[in-house]
Amino acid sequence: MPEPSRVTRADIVRALTAALEPLPWADAFWEGGSAAFGRADAWSDIDLYAVVADDRLGEAFRVVEDALARLSPVRRRYEPAWPPDSGTAQAFYRLERASEYLLVDLAVFKRSAKDKYLEPELHGQAVFYFNKGGAVTAPPLDRDAFVARLFDRRDRLRLRVELFGPFVAKELLRGNGLGAVEAYQRIVLDSLVQVLWMRHHPAHYAFGLRYAHYELPRETVARLERLAFVAGRDDLEGKCREALDWFRETVDQVTEEGVRTRMAA
Image 1 (spheres, rainbow, N blue to C red):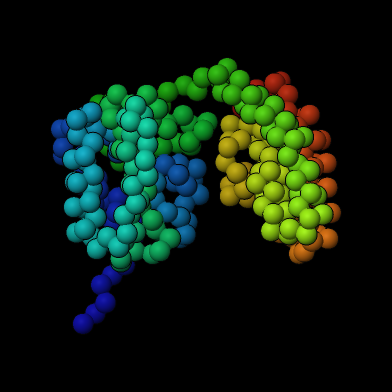
Image 2 (cartoon, rainbow, N blue to C red):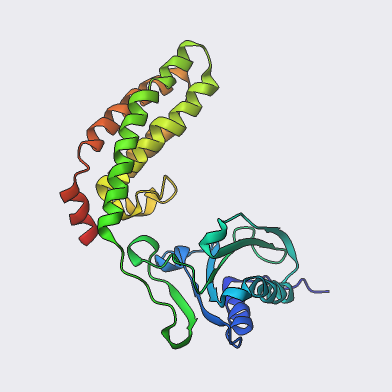
């Protein structure tokens, strides 16, 4: 008997669009993530979003899961918790007949949800599969509020590094290599990455290491990669000093004028 064909992202999009679009209470359905930034590839998962009537959130998931089950058995399902007042529910699906990388990530919003993750500066250009009567629109980013949050975070990072940056050296002196590595990754490197985003691409300052490869300057990415991979205790000690110096240099370069100029560009 021939092996069943593999499920593709196009198969998933077609099946869910066909299942949701005829429903009068389903307003819109779109793809975000890598597709919204124009960099979907063979290893991308699929980030899907829908807006439905407030009282149809549970039914929307039942419709989606029935459609997925017709494509492939669902091997795993995971539902993270969202605050009740967010008007949002989310589930991840691992399909038996899809690539292990093609994880289906579905978020469903109530019509009344305030944040639908559509600001292009933050989330890219949503790829709509239907949007009935233009029911869903991308709101303008409140730049003043965003910049205020960014600078609050910058100041917290400065304090964080000042207070806790020495933990790497402390754990090395104790002979606790694992504790030193954890402090380096969670305190020093994480803080450095955030201020580098603020310096070069402030709208995405929360994007972390994973997306630096795509959006930060090449020389910055190369230096980060060198600092991220440590070969031992001596290497960690030297790279931590370099990372701390780079953080202190960069955090002083995060100015309001620079942030607003880069966001406007």
